[in-house]
Amino acid sequence: MFLSLSTHAAAAIRVEVHASRLTPGDVGWLHVRGVPARAMIEGSIAGRPLHFFSYADGQAALLGLDLDTAAGTLPWTVEVVDAEDERRVFRGAVDVGSRRFVVQRLTVPPSMSDLDPETERRAVAESAKLRTLYRVVTPERLWQGRFLRPVEGTDPGTGFGARRVINGQPRMPHSGLDFPAPLGAPIVAANGGRVALVAEYFFPGRLVVIDHGLGLYTLYFHLQSASVVEDELVERGQRIGTVGASGRVTGPHLHFGVQLGAARVDPAALLRLGVSH
Ligand SMILES: [Zn+2]
Image 1 (cartoon, rainbow, N blue to C red):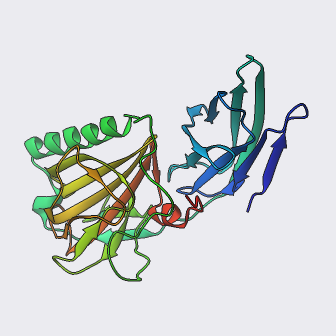
Image 2: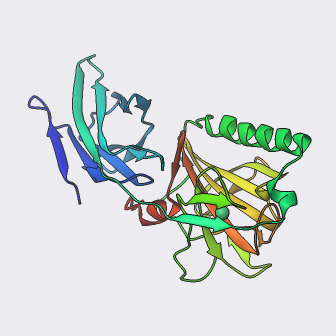
Image 3: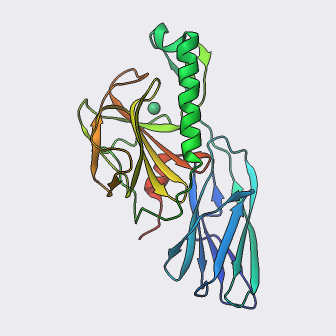
């Protein structure tokens, strides 16, 4: 499916946008067909760089909309410079629709909600470390084909984008998808990548972050155990740990998050992504 097409009159280069209308949290992709051999390609959407990889008869790049993206239009630009230094620029726009997120009211023990200053500092430092990690763009694609659900079952998961009110206090929106799963259930890597982080953080508990390359990361929180180590290469479907209830949780489940550059995107959108190889 593609809904937007931009063709350069002088060449057989075409930019397809899958899809041209997205809502906050969505993951789409651009496919630039007919890119000549040895050409350089660059692009951006709303001023943020796109990271291209070889795909079919050209190059492709994922685009992710943060859950807080406002409705409107996001312009994109793709620039191809061929071996003869001829430069071609393609422009278009993606329409961003609005999306309503649920409001979740949760009650947790006051010790997990009203933090003492030292714990508060720890939690702030840990989330800063994660944001720093997500800014690292590994220049190669380490994933292939469809993304796998990281736990068994068919439950679609809940809570992406939920505006959370914890013990009556509004908090940061929930940026992952929570899958119900029993304590000790196996967790698998959603796709190939390199283990970027294995740690114990205050809110996420025991966690694993996988770098899939080109700015894409998957996050697995609240684990009981992790069976991978940092820098280890993992394959799609490889076991990386077990479901737990570590960190701030109300019971055992897997919190599965997806980060694409600075964008907190909907894991369900990544699982639906139609990049076939
Ligand atoms: Zn969660």
